Image (spheres, one colour):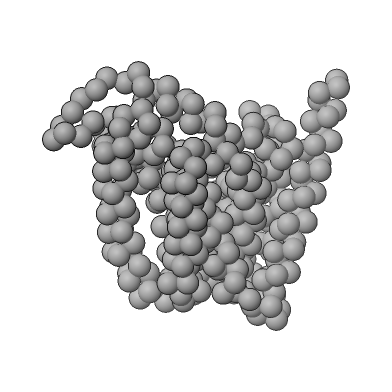
Length: 65
Length: 246
């Protein structure tokens, strides 16, 4: 493996970890928060609920694996 | 209130990482000699200091909303990793972190590795300590920089980390053994909850949202994350007991 690939893999593992789906769902939830906020609607409830849902999905994936 | 959260979060997260680094440094020192091990610690500390010195001032010039969005997103992803593992451990789906077992494994590997000396330093012992301290320290640097810059006080976050370093290093020097009796799994659970809480709070603000009551909402988010995590632990424990009895 080249040093650049190893460097990239290190940072991927450091930030994203072993469940990229959870990281992707968090990105989607934050995008949804920004979109709702742009429409002038209160958004404080979006991420707390999204986090519980993401955690549940991630735990199910970990147990299934 | 947030200053207290900031120091406590940095302290807990740093203490967990320093306990893990101490285990590796001890194994390296006992098996390969203290000179090589401590040289590795010193080299890693210099690299970490350079990273913090370079990134710290750079983070302070980023607009606060953009910083909160990026940092909040990273903390959320990072915090969910910690929380997922902590919930899996608390519910019995993942083995508990055992510093004694890790020390024994590291020691056995270090004792059997070939000895290659460069400039009077055992290369294996140096590399083992260097990598251990750098990798664990990088997480501490990440937490101190992100927490500190977003709250506008890197020194306060660094204070929490420094207190953890003094405490763990002091106990480590005194007992010269892995700190197996530190409630590491409970601390990891607490850190996962703190990172996730701050992640939710800052990512929402960075994305353009506003919290009712502003900073006063932080303890409410914290309570919500604790309650949700406890509920998930309970759910998984019931599922595990069903799986075991089936």
